[in-house]
Image 1 (cartoon, one colour):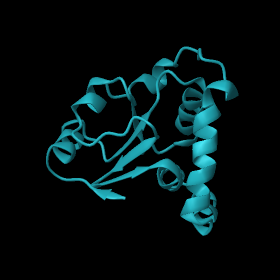
Image 2: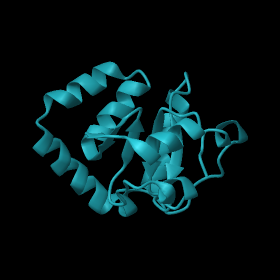
Image 3: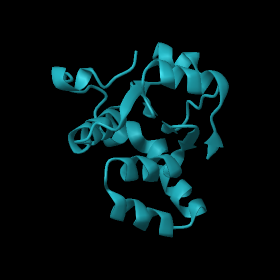
Image 4: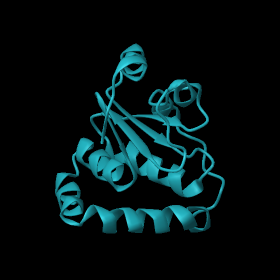
Length: 138
């Protein structure tokens, strides 16, 4: 976890977001995961930006090799991001179970999935329903 200050935090305030998920917009597996999150985030706690967005490019702290969650003044990557994202949408038991697994093992599994993610799902993705479009930061 990294502490967020300065320009990153100001950018979050600007878009009125406290939980932003950064993901690979060219990855079918990642897009499927985002659709799952949109479907299960009934309280709309998450906003989304892909790694090619102007929002992501404007951040002074970036990681292009991992999912990233910016939550308030903190940022999370890899398995920590996945766990915090699940907790944010109310999957607390699943998040708790994930935290029981040592970080080195969680991140190793994350790296394996990340390495083969383009083979796990088709590149193309369905068109995003209009109801979800407001949840994306450009």
